[in-house]
Length: 279
Image (cartoon, rainbow, N blue to C red; front, side, top):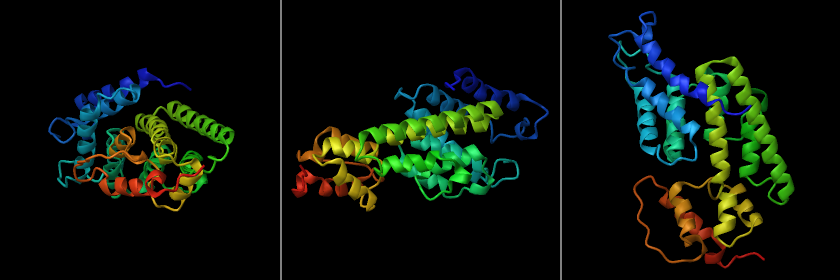
């Protein structure tokens, strides 16, 4: 099923309708904590409708911080205190804003057992943990991790087939969410699709094999030995684009939490630097 942009567009509008309703306790007039909630859902929905557009970073950062902050406010008037769904969508917003480290941190307080099936799948793909049982979380997280770990890298045809099968599984997941008609599940399913596609696009195996002079087999072993992460952060992708992993000299300045240590690890393990280029 193709993405239903009309549905995504209406989701945040319904949040506003609920706020104005006098019949929902959560959105009663004196409740100030939820006044910006529909804006945060709007930012997430807008991004999902325009994933290739890079102009949503500021809105996504605001949404991520709001989703993360609101559940932590322990006040009698805050009916969303401890809300696991909001924390999950905050993690997704951080990920889409290209802050994967913050996304993983935002997952830590979440009680996974309280999430819906679709939200559990989203939790699994953001966390990048391949230990989740398929019978609970579906095949999408496992298939994604197989691709990121390079289980099919020795055979391009098998890798292409694996990605196609995973895409089909995501489509079925999304189709099921739209049929359920629950806003949060639709958002979660669309977020799953976007997270998986971005992780494969930013795969360490795929990118480092192109920018470092090393083969798929070399990086596959490094990744499977857990020497480096399975996906590259924005700063590491920038280093690759500027030829640093292939031996070019550079002066690099990064803010705290941007991935300096991981970047140095990638540089030291790049075959061009360690004279381990495989032919």
